[in-house]
Length: 281
Image (cartoon, rainbow, N blue to C red; front, side, top):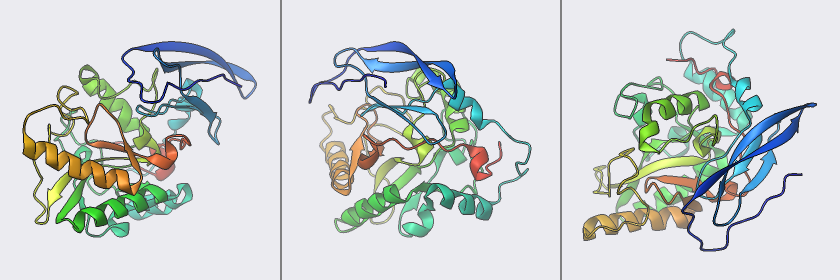
């Protein structure tokens, strides 16, 4: 068993260190590089169903071994074009649901299906179903209902994200420090369908003013807004309160990113694009 410790309650990590572990995987050993917090120790490590190691960090990402990572590339029987119905059928095997069907009144604008992102090109087929783990979609539905009662709503910018897209984002946006390297610090919780990127809209579907644009870099993007604009502060607080009440936790570095609170201490395995018949674009 790999030893672990948790940071003191309420601590604010300011420095990270990398720790290498030799871990037996299927009769062999693999070196797994884990990102730990110097001020309080590492997170909990668990093993997914396919043998991939996952590091649980309460405000960061899940981490997999390089051995598990290599299992994602198998395109021999991949379709040439996306077949949304087939993707949704395969998604059910991983308990992923179609968010558009689950929350019909939710505004969805998948930014990685457009060129309006750090890669400057679409990374998803525009017909890709918007998917989340069933429990996560239920929480998002709850948050949407809370906000609807107040005259607001949610716009969803990203939900399930194929690990293959995460790699592209890291390569394109490494300088922003928003995307961790899958080689060293692991996969985003988006890759398991248990995280969302969202913003606040009014009753007419117009986006409310927030601290920054989506994926605008970490400068001024912290969840704890320090600016003097009272409207922005109020909009952020309205969104955060609804998401927290619905069962989400927030990444402190990105005001738009929320994780399903039930999976912070119970990581979900990543789901590769080929497992959902999602072709490369």
